[in-house]
Image 1 (cartoon, helix red, strand yellow):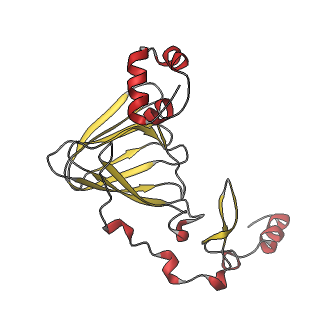
Image 2 (image 1 turned 45 degrees about the horizontal axis):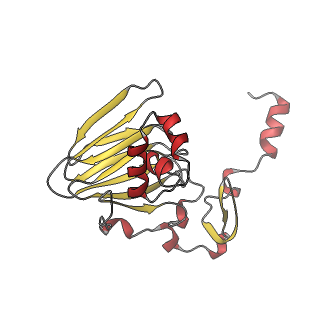
Image 3 (image 1 turned 120 degrees about the vertical axis):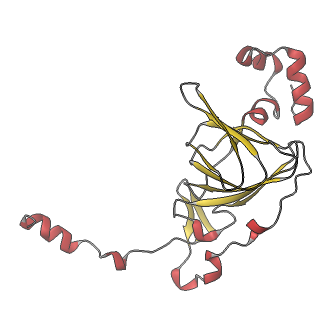
Length: 208
């Protein structure tokens, strides 16, 4: 049996049925590091727990020949506060998602079409790589650098899930070369020569 003081405390706590079951995003309310505000339950509809965009191919007509269709809290109100989200990845032939991280989430990728070469690098700088085919899945731990490359001759497609409704994204190449960090500084922190840095800045729209 519980000690009397603990039993009294348990009796005073709200029952699970009195707690909120969900926190559908209220896009008109304030946001915080924890996510969007919660819509009043009386205003929530079933449609806010459904997202239909993952069945449509993304536009891969870009420099990396890749498209991500997100179903994050910003697009899918129902996942707000639930610790999950999803996305669709399209990789045209020759497509690549360069080294990047998701600061707030681990990632689980499931290939539904084509062949994807994927991998991540641990904090001990150990690479873990694999070639994934239809039906294969790979997990990428939170915050670690990882990538995906189309390794076949047709468009590759994957459905991705995340352990956060807002996983965040930082692509290393864009972080270094798509802004105005000075070339001499990038030389010092990357050991690249100025010619290569300027070439990458030109391709990615950076300056300096």
